[in-house]
Image 1 (cartoon, one colour):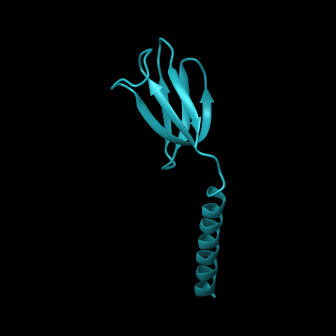
Image 2 (cartoon, rainbow, N blue to C red; image 1 turned 45 degrees about the vertical axis):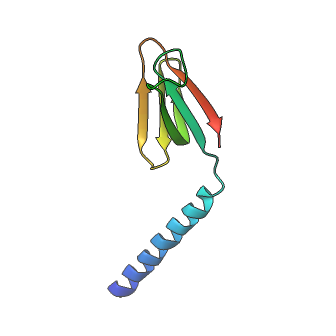
Length: 86
């Protein structure tokens, strides 16, 4: 009985992961470029691939990156960022 329950849970987990993988194929991703000064294209720019934005404001942006990690970027003087749809 216990072995059957474990196998059933394992199969459910595999099916859930497969379903999430299929859904992720159709979700929109974004390329976020954050510049820490007024000029884009400098060496201080940082690029991220974003799955989902959590918060966007003038001084703070938080998002889920392509690896599933929560990333937050803050600036006292205001952020300069560019969002492109992939």
